[in-house]
Length: 474
Image 1 (cartoon, rainbow, N blue to C red):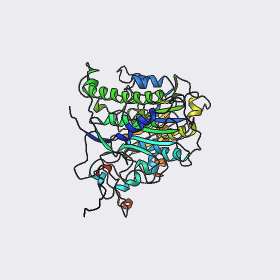
Image 2: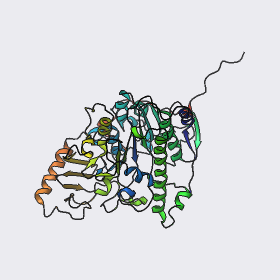
Image 3: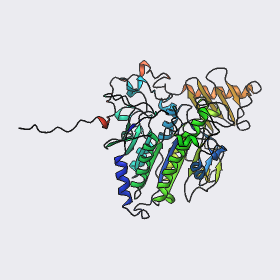
Image 4: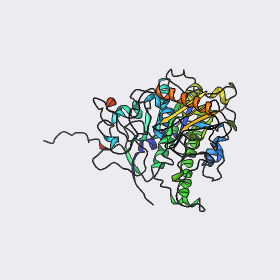
């Protein structure tokens, strides 16, 4: 099995853990609500037990689902990972940000025009909103929002970070060259971890333990099921009847679930469970080619069919959300920011296009959070309205489905519902034509009219800091 050693900041986390244990873990000085937001990476609806999987790879997620509400029609805001995560972090539709395609991971990541991709610097995020309200904010995991210093987590509202500029397990910084793939946590000492997942888990649990006496918000976006999958022998042994990539996926999902369990245990061990909101949300549907499952849903990762867009989602909020409940109307990743901000008692962001879901999942509002939803990533696109869904596939003719009655998209109703087809197509075209242009294309290139005049410096790599100068000896 391919193994690697990844440069990671852990000394700070260990020091923070040691310091935290010296405090009274049952006497927080500020009892405002915390928020842990876990972004699942390419986990399909057919992979998790709380949505019907019998795989047995997600016991911690399944236990968490029983403590809150399962949103069983949750949709990614894009069929591509980076734009979908941008929606989670900003509460905006990614297309409105010009964030239509995933961040490139090849030479474009370190090209002179790198600043033209990712979030525009100073875009409000859930980190900046809550930091301004007095919460300590952190980000751990795969960032995917840009590779320049002005686009790093600490420049976008997160006071603590331990992150990869891109999702990867195998790429390491080449000697003497910063290519944007190193695991970084600015201002701390490097040590080596054998597994990236373990390093990130240590960063997350260290943050939770350290911040026990203050209100905090932590986003954790572990590179769970992004290829290549590198499961451990112990995790593989838990699935002896599976083979190939299905076995690799199950073992990798088990590892991800164990990391989530470690975070939840850290919250409980430090007496913070009763005042901590937990949101779990997927970024996209699962990749069937890499062994994932979207259950009975049609389509795969990267498409705008249900299998490419439907994601697992859980919200727990002690005292406000009834344990063991479900919610079945369409919601989306863009709803995470307004829901968390409202739950923590902060004013809504004027720029947010998502919806506060609390009135809906607690029974206070009987309407639909969204009357209409749209998706577009290049030629792959869809519009959902009034129980119907219009889908433009990557190839072939558009189709429509009575999605409320046919959730698996088994019957294309475009021939028998011409009026509905025309209405949905026109709605999609009006929405699509009003969008700003994509700021970079599927292949990572920048349209000529969008290229920046100057490029900010790349993110500093703390592993390459020069030793302090010393006075010459006389």
